[in-house]
Length: 328
Length: 301
Ligand SMILES: Cc1ncc(C[n+]2csc(CCOP(=O)(O)OP(=O)(O)O)c2C)c(N)n1
Ligand SMILES: [Mg+2]
Image (cartoon, rainbow over all chains, first blue to last red; front, side):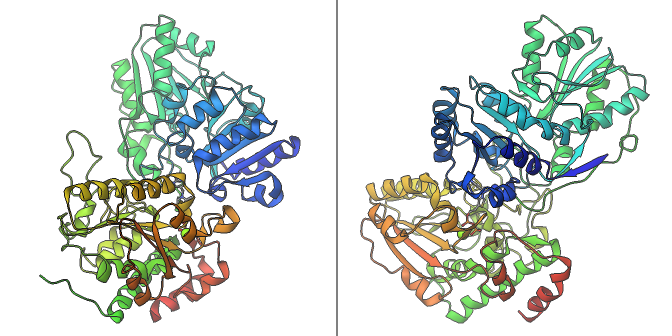
């Protein structure tokens, strides 16, 4: 698997060249969010707003009202928690095209509970007009900014930084509100997002070897969430559905899937893998294992749904790729 | 028991030990919040000795595994604040807002005999309570401080409660200069002056830097003294590396007003080679070819 580096940096520079009205705002975390080069290349289109996220959010609204295209860059957690009222009244209600590029989503930060955006999808899903994209690999990163730029309203992106694997072919674009089909099958449906897709791919490889027919889809667009391919796959699934996400098991991909199943009258079992509550500060790999957001737990969920003991151990799952941040 | 008065030399020795331990961590792990140790060592050492009136540590001597997230079934876990002594009406309380200074606080606790001198062995180790960013369970921390700009208000509310109750102890809160940009900081000063909270003492490590570089290149904050005063606080600014001047600053009269003490510091104090990187010192990495230079400084400390 190829590991790509600073993919966001390249893409934001490309987009900036194409769109002169694109501006970047940051609250003292630009260097941690791959826009250091942007600042150097476009100093007059980079607005340092100080460590003052609330002001920055409404400020972006003012810029957007005047025709600029603000791309806010800071940690995901600082784009929804303390700024929710500003997000809703300054940006979402007037449906302004402000893009919130949120870095180190979920438990991908070593910064502890204050830095972990564990309920951002839940919160942002409840904000009218807001679209939500959750990035899982370098190809997602390559296409996501254009998708956000083209969306007619505010967008919240859960972005990955620095070393990111390329899981999907670079020439197969992300399609808005369409999941990426990674494998087709009719025993179980696995829906994964963010860093969990890499985990799920490790699990599905072994599950298929053991004779389980797996439909695996990677979800980039979390809102809207009405892809008919997902509905069809779930309708066909003999045993049920498993979702796995870098987020609380309430309000995110799992809950969106539950809504979709209920709305289409698909009465099947659903196992939601995600955090059960607040986490704490430690490395990403440690936290994924501790809270069960990993390939092993996914295998267990499939065993539970199918009622089969698949006899899969840790050693059967492909080596874990270890990329962790030293720095918050 | 009378409070021990430390000599300037003793306080300096504590400050030096903080710097040395954190340089040791940077050498071991390849990077850490080293500049914060360099800028705040004298401030934190002075606070923990002559400035604050704290009871003896009631915290566990050795670090412990992460004791779990607070919740209905987990409210009695060991609290980080107990390392600053059990709360008592006449004792001071200490709130750390600059969450990323956690390692500095742990080292200060160790250097003042409040936690095991070996505690840093568990610093930033997966599954332990000595996290890189402090929270309720982290030694020396009253609250989860990682979202900048909130702790000052928690200290404000605590000071308000204590004043109503008639406590004579004060509430100290330590901030970095970057978070002065948060609107909440100023909302707190406004409220603290409205409620005449002369028991709230705000200490700032003004090292002139934040993540992206120099403070004034990100968002101008000066003139700080005038700003604090116009919001209703008393405010003094001193050299944060001058132990006598810093300790004396707390004697400034501030009747019916919160007191703000600004310590002007530099993030390379005591570790000269860092100077050439200033102001990009928020997270200091030591590369393989710099190791020798820094190792030598460490050995000579
Ligand atoms: C609300 C919030 N915004 C952003 C951050 C990320 N952050 C952590 S430390 C820091 C810089 C704080 O400034 P300062 O303490 O002056 O930095 P230093 O002197 O340590 O370089 C930032 C922006 C945060 N923790 N909380
Ligand atoms: Mg600073």
